[in-house]
Image 1 (cartoon, helix red, strand yellow):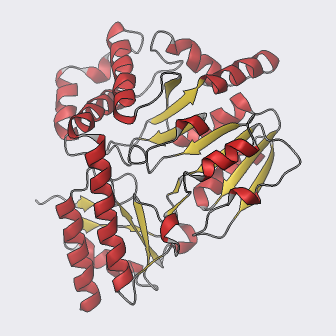
Image 2 (spheres, rainbow, N blue to C red):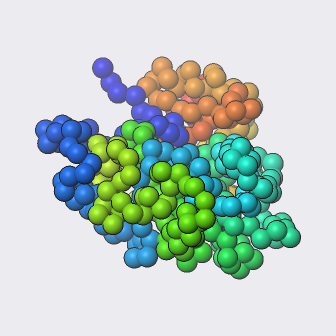
Length: 360
């Protein structure tokens, strides 16, 4: 039976080497090893080394593992914020982070724009210095991307705040300016093409020091930064982690290093250009984000004019699975993942199929 091609924005298609790496993991009994063993510590340490090599991660940034990126929101708020956080909201997921801050009793400030837009740094006017600034680089719900050039201006306005950025659906295809970022995080079920169940948290010493100081003043979560940092000294974790997923991430990182991050990024831009060119050439399928400079290169969102269900059903009969719109956009958007595992040939095939649907 032919396999489907999953262009869904997460979980998405598995990276093409994952199946063999899973077989290798089972042969080595990786799911059964102790997370207190030297074998696991070696896997953790090597995974961090591979992430550094792939993304030019500076030495003073460390890598922690959690159950999901959503968990990291909670850990950030509990570990780094006594009262005030500031949130740039440009879609459903950035709004959810703000809501979590409110639920935890923080004095959260929200600067929100309509879906499809980005919060400009000039709009961030507040008399209350925030302890944490939450930025979503790639809003998976709407396909809008906050320009990385904004990070420098935000840092200059709030130099003492912990600046954290959500790169859940854009890393490693985005080259991050780490000099303006204290914390970045992602999930593995998107660009890294792995099964869901692992969050990866990149964090600098400024953030660790802030968390350690706060931990002396108040009770913090068992799985917070202080305990993550303590166990990290021996490449272990405070709780039993998803050992299999960390093993698979390690292997996929090495595969990406072998291919080359420059090539991965170049191919990503080419594939995105194919889809956006298609959307701009059809009267009834348009890019949802009107400003080309704000369009995601990894989650490409098209406005179907209400034909989403029809398009998705037709493509499904041909083994192509797209994502529908998110939330209130469910019936009017399609979301197309453009991750490293999606080949140029697959994206060209999708363009042909979409063209046929609109011409038919």
